[in-house]
Length: 157
Image (cartoon, rainbow, N blue to C red; front, top):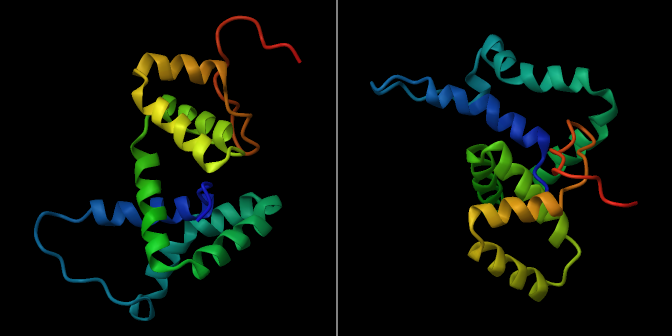
């Protein structure tokens, strides 16, 4: 899987995860296969994806590409992607911005240079990481708000 996480996959994870959390401590009967779900249950699961599809027509082609890539992905890669989504969900907004900044910084690096950078990153204190991310912000997201601006004047263009 590429380092980018599919927004459609994240959406699916958000849709399915609350159902798991909502279960009581008492053992519940296993849920049926998709084919045995009622139309109302299927609609409940699909509604968030349908809403996003209708709300963002300019991204429909990307959504289809994400879905095809997920379908073609081997199970171990899907598991790895799910772990990445779980890690992303557990991050604070500041940690997410740092992760985006690091991703964009190392994106074009050779494997050895990227490994060296990540070794140094792991040795940094949280304050050093925050300072580094302020000096090397990720580019603005095309589908969301821009990252927080560092204190001080903007960099020269």
